Image (cartoon, rainbow, N blue to C red):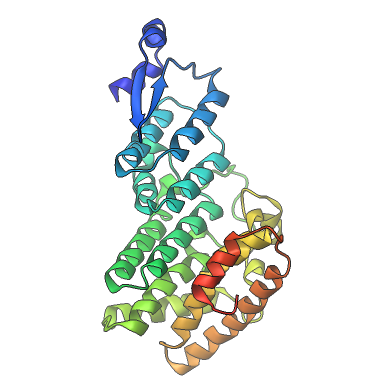
Length: 310
């Protein structure tokens, strides 16, 4: 913390320019000189992206939380898109929990789970982690715990999206902690445990409750992108990111697998209700797959993880 204070302290400017603070990241030396919080922001954003992009080892990723703490302590305002990019890069390198840990320390790091994209991306990475472990029981139980941590944070005031006092939720808007896409990620992991292992009554009860909540919040016949007010899909920082076909297929495919798995576990009446949502979501995914850019690859990789007919 003392070193981070020095970087943004004017009285250390000359000394740091002559003798910068040095950080070794996977053999690459990064030098931190004095930064003016008012004039150096663009370079800071570039430096953050460059540094995190170079993270490879556990020792490298141990620097993530202190880095975000330093940015937050200095009062830097960085765009939401950069926080989302950080999440994607870190999770793609297998360090999902490092992002969760930063979010759990939001009051020190400033890393808020306050957008639909960040929440769905991290839950997506958690599901893929369990899938890539071939649904190993311990890995899947850990993934469910992590998903629960994420959803629990959505109830924390520190993670609430900033809204003008005169702009409450739109009519029909579902808050993030009740969003069916969010609940479906939890359902997915719980349902896999219930279907593959002697998971116990607690897991079975969770599957039942999550399935009932989703059915209640998701009217039959509605597409998953019709569950929130249309205005939200016009703003990329709200739900507009789901309009991108490849992105939507990538995020929605694991949820479809989860709904299908849950339908095999719950009682017949609830299973029938889940199946109608499965049918709707499958059609919505297939429609989006036809609209993806020929060079887009992420959705193809994700789909193949769950279905062989990609």
